[in-house]
Length: 228
Image (spheres, rainbow, N blue to C red):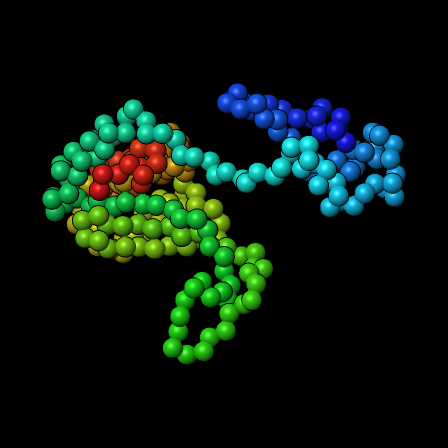
């Protein structure tokens, strides 16, 4: 068992410690003892005993670490400065609509409590086995605090984003009263300035509605560094 584990171990990639790490599970070690060392299943100890032996070799389980966000990039302050200038230029003009768009993580659909409360008895599912999800997408009018909330059972694509902007534009009173749209976004994979489909649809929106569109993107991980 020692030869199997040692041969499939690796050092710390950052060389900050002398520890050895392995991706092997006890189940995989057991299978390799049969396949490579010739042991039978009956000859091997229980998985609990194998787990104890692996721990004695110094290979104890480690908690999964969440990926840390990127450090503040050099351009962060400059980008926020540009956004501030954009707000000062456009926000007080009556012919300008300032919309901020964002997509949230998908939510399970089902009869779940979600931590809610009610004055009448309401029963919720004991386990969330549902495989149905919806993804929330929001549009915030930065000047009026008006909010449009939309849901989709599929992924939030560039087409979906622009379709919702067009829908909000028609139903919120912007159409016919505004000739400029300042669109704030997080520069995500579906709405960044290098996404050809998104840019194509935004250009079509601008031409169809005779609107000037100003794209204002926040820096990476802006929620962690936003001075507001």
